[in-house]
Image (cartoon, rainbow, N blue to C red):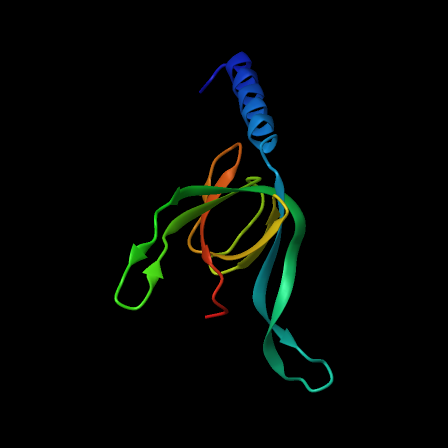
Length: 132
């Protein structure tokens, strides 16, 4: 077990790292999940979109924007997009994420589990194509 002084220094380091990362956030996101909602009048449950979180500070990172690759039918463009968020935000795979950054609006789906660190979390995104 670490001595008390080392634990305090370690917590300060995490706090400083988190502040540094959050200073790079230049966007906000809205997280939407599809959930079973029961209509109290008809007693019928159906899937509906529900906003889980709005105006959450974040940052999109475009890891590689490859040149268009020509195929027989059309040019395919590949891009890897990563979302940086606060570590306490819970984001389920398959959630719809609307990000507004640099004056533009993007719609994505969380493509997998988040990599959660003490200072932030990173989630790879894919283009939103609708609910599965």
